[in-house]
Length: 380
Image 1 (cartoon, rainbow, N blue to C red):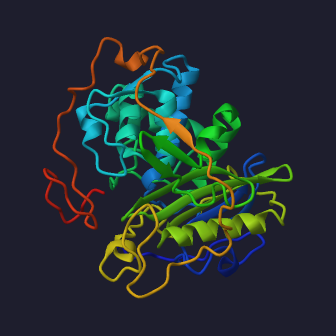
Image 2 (tube, rainbow, N blue to C red):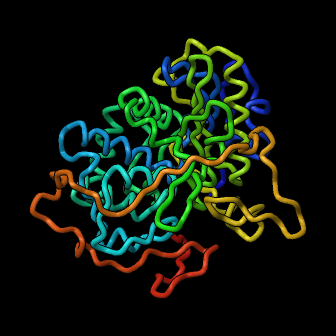
């Protein structure tokens, strides 16, 4: 793992040890802010570059919302799965090349299941290709003032050139929630039903932590466990960003503690946009692989519940209550795409595009037939 240079961060009203739970690394990025006003309540290493993993799908959603607003496609437009999209590793839906679903269902799937194949398909269909969509993601990021981000793909599978910062993610969250309130329901779905499968949201705050209304988890070995969680109480909506936790429980508890404390305090006069860049070596992207995916790591890698060490009891996320009511499910399926074909695909068929080999498999999961051999710097 890249040697991390820890710096003394500026905090607003709370020390680092109070702000971040014991499960997270002491200098990992974190930020708590008011979505409506933009007021920052707490921040730590907000300008440190970090691999976003599946938090990327929030940028994918925002870029897609902009395309819908521009009339390039509609929520009932077809999203077709290409061979290239179908080849991506899990999390995925496993749809065959040529399968078609609505953009509406595709968005629901990537926010709950975090499906890499479906996210890639959204990028291809909206942008015309993965590369063209990434260019649009970067253009939107520049327009929003996300100065520490660079996007390469739509699903968040690891690329050393794909990175962001907690401060940039805060800008993105505000843009999604304030510009497109009509799409808020995509981010707090408790679970989806796809055929016979029932798939729970990876974010354990949804449906359990009071007031939670979104947003997204993310994991690759290089990023650690990331989470953006938002909640509304008494007319205020706060969002907590936690990057680089060492387990799913740690990221969830850290975010819940930040939100819980934040509702008891007012924001400062400092806004997300007004934060002044700080931190030594902030332009070096941190790599968490050794901390979360090496043999000595505390947890094996997954974007769901982390396996526990042999002989120990499962970890308890203490601040998040158990769900005491039936989970709310949303049904998704293939078909039903009666809307206009995305303008980027007018007269084209993506299914046969880019018949490439399968990406390298995660080192902690059994490789399927045909997977590329594990490289020293595996893409996961």
